[in-house]
Length: 195
Length: 290
Image 1: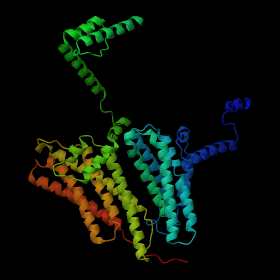
Image 2 (image 1 turned 180 degrees about the vertical axis):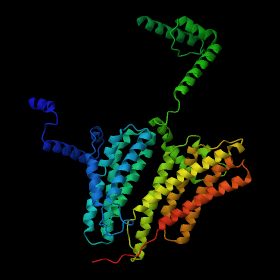
Image 3 (image 1 turned 120 degrees about the horizontal axis):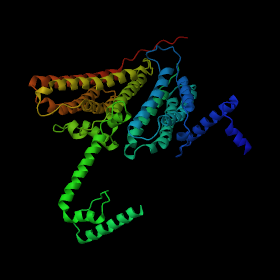
Image 4 (image 1 turned 135 degrees about the horizontal axis):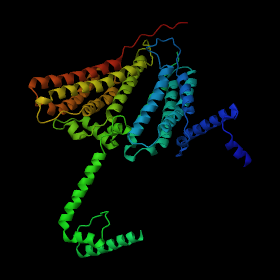
């Protein structure tokens, strides 16, 4: 009991850096688990944070980078393009759901959309590993299957968290942009070819 | 407060007794707690006039409410929320209306019913831009299968070009059209011009038919592609023309003809642009450097 009181007494400014980082990492990890096993809970909504989305977005953008042998015009998406697509896409979807009358706050929605990119980031990792093997139609079918499964997982996860905050006769209107968003990201992952 | 409660209860008793006696006497849920007898007496004595009084009260109240519910200023969030005040069934109905234009049916009056929305135009344009880029990419992949000398690349900049073009079209052309129609407003007596939002709405929904067309352009048979393109252009332009015809009909023949043909021409340009963008120019493969 005394240690509890002491914990609440001292501000987090005095604790060691390791404590701070571990606490934030644990929170991020807990939310990753919630995304991987989506149940109807509002942990993601209640204690939202944007660390997870940032880590996932940076990882995804780094993995989608190609070497710059190609000319700039015809190449794949560069780091900045992926970053902009993810964040502006999430902001647009959030604005859309708020304009339709949803009662979710701006950052909560950004948090959910960002965390639900986790399955697609896993898909990107798997695709990169699969691409190390020799190319061919089997290679492509494996990648297609993985991306489709992870795309469905992302949609299910984000719908489980976001659907309740919309008015009932506008749910489809709010979910469709989420579908489009993850579809575009899946497309970027599927068409990735290292040079 | 006990006295007031007693009064209220008493009033209800009296009113219900009187109702039982005279079933067609009007009762009001008035908030004024006058003497119960007086209240009920008014109801019984002059039912007609009390009804009129109540109506006057109601209209006063609604007038006050409407005054309070003024259009919010453009700096508030509520102003923009009024443009997204649609349900799923309404959006689907509007899309269906744009896919099947009929000569008598004016899209604006029949489907929009003076409640234009920005949800449809915005997301239809976004979908069209992405579908164009994705199917263009797919065409390149399929072409590379048949001819391995073609160099494949994701061509990500296509999304940006397609998106900017489509959004500019859906905003600038209705702006010009709306401005022109307002300028010619003096010539028309009967039908007022459409508001800017309604014009944007018509243009946005009329682009919906291009989405399945672009997907069908994946079939690598050239005459079939031109057929689909012409069909989409016909449906889309028909929606626009049938909507604009009642407004333009009262103008001089020359102006009407020029306006309608300009609208159709611009729309055809967009369709041709989509086709050209979709095909792109496949580059021969670069020699691999060791």
